[in-house]
Image (tube, rainbow, N blue to C red; front, side, top):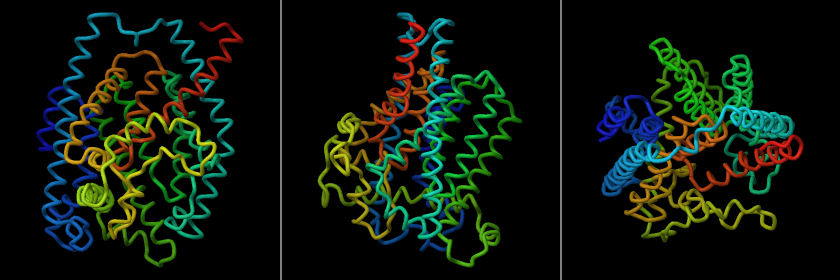
Length: 424
């Protein structure tokens, strides 16, 4: 079924698209343990959570079928809305196309916004990264995560602006090759410091963002570039696996080189990503028998969590799947997934809501393909990076992130320049 979906997408678009990437990533996170089990012929079965006694065969098959239904509805709705967009833009002039004069103004505002964000967030970013790195070294990654309270941690919130500032400068001045390289240098430097904290969440989002940019900004892709990006991808995979190793073996004498030689890095990566299948199965096993479904509360609350959290240690509208279902399974660190989130909201009919996500993906692709508005392009690429990570996390905070990290600072700089220069 996965092969059928990928072939259909490639025939439909005749290129590697964002939806194609999403489906491939979902394979890694849903079937990671299955792939290892298939190629190793079941050796060391105790290492793979899909084989343990925590998942009955009934739940196992129900989980696989539910995920495939979700993907089928997602891809079919994406194709339908993509065709609708193509027909729609011929009926009236698209508002995504703007004049050269306005393009220059938008790029200027976006660049100034990015520079201001970098200057303001840099000290907070350095404090946050070095503090977390030192805590990870002293008490281990899990120890740091157990103590972290990020609901009202203004240092963490402001530090999250830093990569957004880099995105803004990169997109607004994309034609400047020197600026692109300078931004990428700071991106790599930031990623290296971030990996020292033991976390990898933002790294995956950064990679997803630049994938979206390069897919629709590069004028041509040849075999040499494909080979180069494959090599970069493999290096990144080894780095991510290494981060997991070091944060789990800070106080052991195990040699990393021996570890990486004796174990296939691809299998090590799939072993970690494949835990997501257990996350989804855990929700299907316990909802609604143990935990009542929330009937769309996640998707309603995404508009409410935008409200500033001034009077509570925790936003009262924040509903995370991990906190509810993690205690119901003996293996910790299950986190969440877009598929688990759908089941938690609507149980077995959650796949129908994938039609909405198909619409969002179609709109994102449409914007990236035709717009010359850098702000629209930035928002579309950013939302894609968030949606891609939703294979392993909640979608609850995506809308809030766009408002807080992109539109508010851009609007503030736009207003300032309008008052100062009379920008129209």
